Image 1 (tube, rainbow, N blue to C red):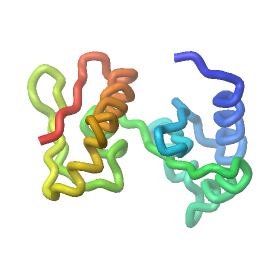
Image 2: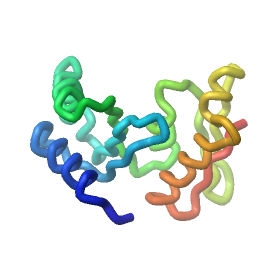
Image 3: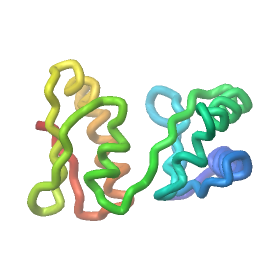
Length: 136
């Protein structure tokens, strides 16, 4: 993936303010600036009581979401779908299943015309090549 000047500036600002290593940065469909942070750096990136996130959000005048990367794909998917709760488990052939209990949670995870699920699959394939997310 190629980053434009805007994304590079976002990454540099995040790393300077938080001292956490940013793995990826993108703006989602809702206009939220999403940072994927290296494994173990989420606490440093968020800061005490969310101070770092609040400071960066105020500077950029954009809402921010921080997701911690994890080398295990099922834990990374759990981090991606938060705050929606679902049971995540690994199936055969690299498929990760997300089992939702409520209809509203399932609808928010899938999105209109399954666009949210397509976005999640695109993100997960960037780091884990033969992995796919399916909602049950």
